[in-house]
Image 1 (cartoon, rainbow, N blue to C red):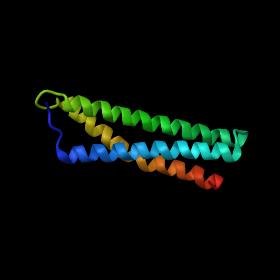
Image 2: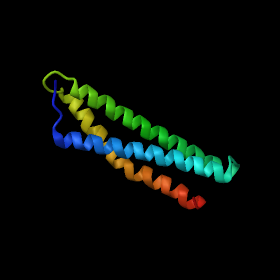
Image 3: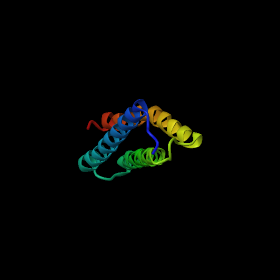
Length: 113
């Protein structure tokens, strides 16, 4: 089986941990917003944004996990396409994490949660 270098492995686990944390924060913020203000005309947009954000983050986590498993189960070493896909996925996630975090913070600040 292919061996994933320790540096890449650490990056993968760090990203997975951050993605799971983001889903948790997005869903708990959605819950707090709903409990505090219910589903009204002025909350629907932010509730939908939090739902969609959690879905985007979940999809990113699933993609990273799938590519990681594909890489780890490759014979001897992963092909270039898989290695490139893994690198691009991690780069995408690492670029998006701050934006996802800011989106959640904006909702929290806007509603005083």
